Length: 353
Length: 240
Image (cartoon, rainbow over all chains, first blue to last red; front, top):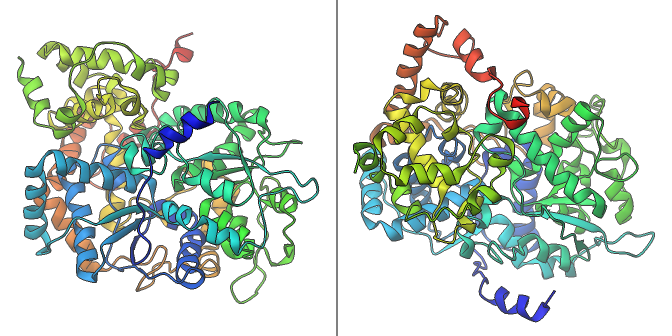
C-alpha cells in the first residue's frame, strides 16, 4: 500500500470536532441495550476530561428507525430534529453530540438537504413553530459521540491503565472496527476519514495500542437493513449479511469487534448467538465467539473502569477472553450484582461464559 | 412524461437522489439486498428513468421496492452521484400514499412496522425501548435478553439508567409535554395522516383477505400474517 498517497487523500477528510460545551442527544438503541455506554461517555467527558455536556430531559427519539422503515415522512423527521435544535438553542448550546449513527446520518442528511433546498428549511421552521411555538438555529458543530472520543484519544491513552495488547505475548490485539453505514457512506465529509479511510475507531485503536484488521468485507453492512430486521419474515436478510461479514473476518483471528453504531453492536453480538444456534458455527478462536464492544466500553476498559459497571455482562457474547488477553483483573463474583452489592440470579447459556 | 413520475419529482429525496443513470450497475454490485434477494437496484432506477407510468405503477405494486435495507452503500459508489436508496424511499412513500403497498407481501408489512415502531414513538417517545422488545417476537436476542427483561430495574440501576424515571438518563420517562409536542409535529407535518393511510389501506386488504384486524395492537390475524408470511419467492435460494 502506498502510505504517502493514503496520507494525502486522508488530509482531504479531516473533520472539525468541537472541543467543549456539548448538547448530548441519546440513542433509542444505545440507551436500551447499552445504558452503561452512554453513562460512561458522560462520566468520561465530565469527570475525566473536564468537559461541559448538557442533556435536556425533553429530547425524544429522532424517529430515524421509523423514517428508514418508511413509515415516517421526511417533513416529519425534519421537524422532530428541528425541535432538538430548538431545545439546544434554548439551553444555550451550539455543538451537538449524537449517540446514534442512524440519528447522526439523519442530522447530516437534513442539514445537507436544507443547504440544497432552502425552502425546506423555511417550511420546517414554520411546521415547528405551528406545532410547538419553538424556533431553532443550525448547530455550529455536529459530532457523533465517537468523534469526540476520537478527538481525545491521546489524552485517554495518557491516562490508560490497560492497553490493547496481549499481555502474555506483548503483541497488539487484532481488532475489527465497524463504523456503520450511515456514519459516512451517505455524506463522507461528515465522518472522520470519510467513506474511504474512516478512522474514527481506527484512530482510537492505534492510540490505545491495538492493530486494525483490514479484511475483505470490512465495509459491508452489519445486516440491520431496518425493515429487513424489524419484520420477522425478513430476518434472513439480516442474519445472512452478518454471516457474510463474520465469515470474511474469521481467518484474521479477531480478538474484538469494535462498533460505532449501537444497532450494529447489538446485531453483531446477537447474530453470532443466532448463527451458533442455527449452524453450530462460531467465528472466534477455539470455539469461542468474538466479543463486540462499543467505543465507550472499550475506552472504559482502557481507563481501568470495572467491566461490570460498564455492562459487558449484558452482551450475549461475554468478554472474559478479551479481558484475560488484556491482563485486566476482574472480580467474577461482582458480575451479576446490584448497585448496592446484592446477588442477582446468574443468567444461563451465554457465550464465552 | 407520466403523472407518477411527476409525483416522484415532488419528493426531495427523488430530486436529490436521481440525475441520470448510465446503467453501470455499481449500485447492484455493492448492494447487500442484491446478494440476498432477487433484487437489482440498477433495474429499478432504469425503469423509473423511462418515465413510463405503466412501469412505475408495476414497481409501486411490486415486491422489489421493499427489498432494499437503506444502508445507502449505493450512494457512496454511484459515479453519477445518484442514490438508488433515496429513489426507493420515494417509491415506497408514493406506493403507500396511493395504497399500492398492500398489493405485495413485503409491502403489506408496513402495517406491522407502524403498529410496533410507529406506536412506540407516540407511546414512549422512543422508536425502540428495552421494555418494548418482546422476546417472543425477537428470539434472536437470546437468553441474556430474557434475563434483562426479568431484572430490568437492577440492571439499569447498576449501569446508571433511569428507567421510567423523571429527569435525564438512559430510558428516562419522556415528559408528557414532549410527547404532546411530538404528536403535534406528526399532525402538522402529515405524519399522522400517513399513519392513518397505512391503517386504512391495510384494513381494506385485511377485509379482502378475510383476515381479522382490530383497530389497535398486534394481537390480530392480519398483523401476524404480514409479520411472518413468506411465500418463498423472494430469494434465489428459495427458487432453487
